[in-house]
Length: 318
Image (cartoon, rainbow, N blue to C red):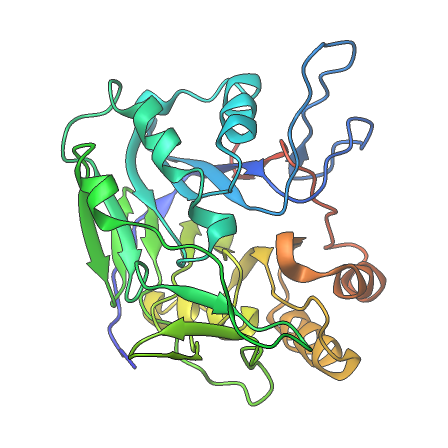
């Protein structure tokens, strides 16, 4: 596993729109870091789905840079949300994908088509290792693995985007960094055996060796870490961001923590390790699972934020 470190630029502010997530509630109140999309009385509503997508802007010395990380699965719903949230795809300087699962990439091609006339040719599309591999799931009791889709490299390149495959930390727009491949340091964060990948002639257990997360160094606050699904483990993911940035202070942790259907022991150990990092904001999304979300709310009530699709989070100066 890489031991590469990277010198980070501090951002004055990072703003994160959750373009897609599993849950939406128009009546949920704003929070310390969160501003909710209301849409009350409108004929159009925010779309929620089993998927995850973020649009992110960093601000450094008054200059704003945009990127998109993950894309959800229902392109009509995601593009609807982009419109309702007033997101300008023309501000995007880079696209990134956390890993090659359908609920994170299926809407990508249509989003890239919509952005095509607004961003320069050759705009980078960052991926980790094995992002374009075939993946499968083997549900309990199933006789054979079920294919869950495959993102095609050629489909992206044909639209004029430049695919950049990474395994070490990299800055994708000013102040936004991919973690590089995530080192596994915990004993309890394991990938469920039902998730498979094609490496040879038949599917084998997927270790998500190329999974990526994003992090930001917010001036005076510390790290903001964003995962996609967190198959590598959300604790491992935050530790990776700390290691490669040489910054210990964690300000916020958000994203899919992949604790759905996890044993309570695993949920408890995850929360214990996240609590020890002393973040000021924790936002479990997508595949975290109801039981784990409820446990984070109970054990970290001051830091916990219940996410809803369409929520905008601001960390740093407003």
